[in-house]
Amino acid sequence: MDTFDSIFQRAAQRKGGVRELEALLPKAESNAALKKITDDRVLAQMTKCIFRSGFVWQVIENKWSGFEAAFHSFDVSTCAMLSDEDLEALVRNEAIVRNAKKIQSVPKNARYILDVRESHGSFGAYLAAWPEADIVGLWADMKKRGDRLGGQTGRFFLRFLGKDTPMFSADVVRALIDLKVVEKEPTSLKALAATQAAFNQWHQESGRPLCQISRVLACSVPD
Image: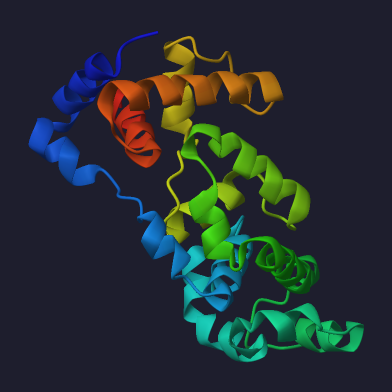
């Protein structure tokens, strides 16, 4: 497996230089900033990522004020108590995207957030406490305890909220395969563990957050 420095140099060469590459790299929020995120904004971001999945993102953005109104500004306690009748009414609400299964995810994820609140005080505190050295463990926990938060949806949610996480774009997966970390897109426990170990090593070598490492990997593969 290549060193991070060699991967970074390839990426910089392909993007026109170090300065140009650095300008493309995302930043993660600090743990202090994560702790300040209110649970209603957590539920809102979860919902936005779920509805965006497999759909035209701009449509969700254009309708977002309707989502905020329909789901009571994503007040977690209120959303957790949505009744079957409430959900049926939401399926008929033209102010939002009327996907029944995705609508049903809102009360389920609200209850997930309430469970986390019991143990950590807030979802933001829960994210801040989770070590990046086991980010795949966080992905698994969200998939198990939340609703429709597996795969890229869960990773997009974390990225948009500010939690440091790598993304598995097609280019990142291609880089991981070329570097012989995995043989195909990592989905099995063994492949995810191998990917986590590689990211941990590159983090130790570079001191960079996982989100930047994954972007460098994506930039390192030929167009």
